[in-house]
Amino acid sequence: MHTITLHHTLPNVFAARQNEIHSDIWLQDVMLERGRTYLIEAASGTGKSSLCSYLIGYRHDYAGIISFDGRDIRQLSISEWVELRQLSLSTMFQELRLFPELTAWENVQIKNTLTHTKTDADINRWFEALGIADKRNAKVGRMSFGQQQRVALMRALVQPFDFLLADEPISHLDDENGRIMGQLMTEEASRQGATIIITSIGKHIDLAYDETYRL
Image (cartoon, rainbow, N blue to C red; front, side, top):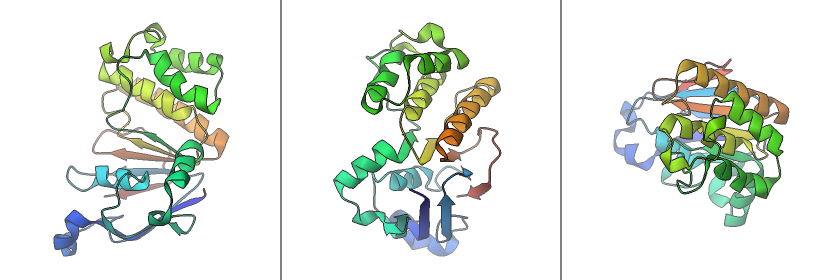
């Protein structure tokens, strides 16, 4: 996948007040291109969660068109969405969606055993770099939210992708751990020639963004 395009897109819930919308994305023509890095800044209530849900195909309650490589995503079949999420589109969810009863290592490996993308040594290096090597065998449900965010990032990186969507990835992290997460994202995206899309309602990873949009 090479491009994600939004054409005059607007959540249905905003339709009654569309004349009041002042956004770089809603009701605009926006193209996100592979190999670039984007920041989407949003205030609470401006539709960030809706946008993320649209981009990964979980919701379709919007006007306008969102397309992948020129194809309206409303036309995609379930099997095509499955393939996209396996090979082209990786997501680090704001709410993380980890398995609390599994260990940190198991949460990463549950995807890696399907994709065969990384070696155990690769993943161990990430645990070390992110400062949670001692939590590798701890159950995720007993870890802090910031520690869980680091596990969720690793899980997002153990697959092929053209676009990585990270929804508020460092909301509970200090600056140093945020920097390390950004470095790992950048390294993996560069290796795959992929795009990074970061969303934020305040604190965000300090990357060399090609474009910043305000929602």
